Every structure is written in C-alpha cells, then in structure tokens.
Amino acid sequence: MDPVRRAVDALTAAPELVGRALHAVWLFGSRARGAAHEGSDVDLAVLCSPVLGNDRFALADRVASAAGVEVDVIDLATANAPLAWEVVTTGRILLERDDEAVERFVRQARFAAEDAARRHRMIVLATAGEVGGARR
Image 1 (cartoon, rainbow, N blue to C red):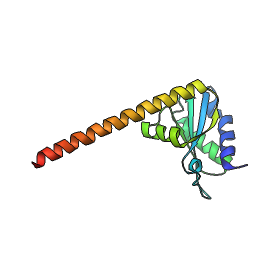
Image 2: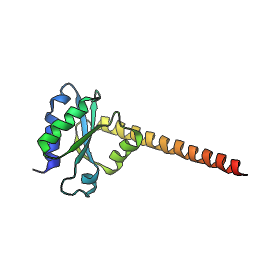
Image 3: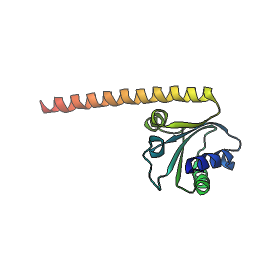
C-alpha cells in the first residue's frame, strides 16, 4: 500500500478525530502535483469540525508513524487564505464525506483568496503612488 493511502487510513482511524465530524481530506503539495520523489512527505489538509487546534500535531505524528513517511496535517478551518486556496486549486480530494461542507469551504476559500488579492493590489497601488509622489 502506498504511503498516501496508509496516511489517510491512519488519519480516519485516529483518536484525535473522535468527537469531530471529518468532512474531507485533500492531498496537496508535491505528491498531488506528481512531483514527489523518494522521501517526499505527505501533505494532508483536513476539513473537520470542531477545529483540530493543537491536536493536529499529535495527529500528524500518529499518521506519519503509520504511513512510514513524514506527514504534515493542516486544518483548513484555520489555514490562511493563500494556503487554503492552494489546497483547493492544486490539491486532490481523497475523502469527501460531506459535500455541502466542502462546497461551503471552497466558496469561502475563493472569496478569501479574491479578497486578499484585491487588498494586495490596493496596497501595491497605494505604495507605488506614495513612492512616485515622493520622488517628484
């Protein structure tokens, strides 16, 4: 069995998820892009409620031990907008238990990414105007 499958199997059975609704698991990073090499870690993004908080570190250790490779686990509920959007746009859903929760998350991630890009453009334009104005 490949390390990704072992990781997902270990994740779904992990005691850190007891009492939480696991909505979906994405694979992202080099393994999702097909650019992994021997020794590449497994990057998993988890959508669950309530949020994992610090339990994600114990979860990542448990899953890594079972998978036999390094595993990074991110909680999409607390991920920053660029990372969440990267998962949505370049990742692969490996497990989907609640399609409504997934659709809601994807909409929120898209909105947050668009909002962050819009704010970034405004800052760049404002900064360019200030720099340009100061030099005149």
